[in-house]
Image (tube, rainbow, N blue to C red; front, side):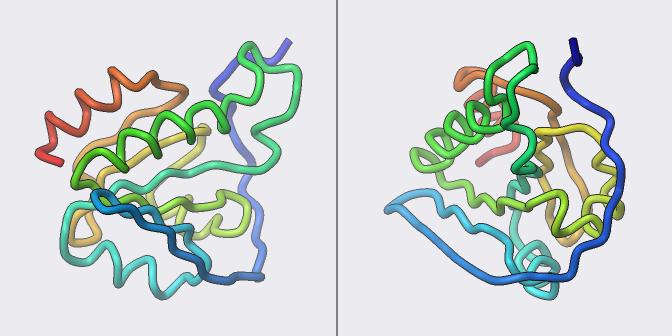
Length: 137
């Protein structure tokens, strides 16, 4: 049985697109353009969530670990002033390598293109809310 979080291989893919969804509080963006990533993270504090489609495969200790983590994180972001960028690990392995992301799911807090804090793995809403509070989000 595979333990979670997993150490991940780096791969290079070049297909990219762009989409944004927002609420009246936090905003959630799914990264689909490499250049926009560094533009978005150059000013304010922003959460960057690394995930992969295959992370939702059966056989993990927790069924669909990335999906479960995504739901909790999105719920907390929507009820805060935080902004979230979702980054597909496989499509953006260059960004993943830049921030040394080798376990999924993983969430980083970035400002001015520098990492301020991070957490790895599945976290419940209480942990995420405390993380946001600790970092004034």
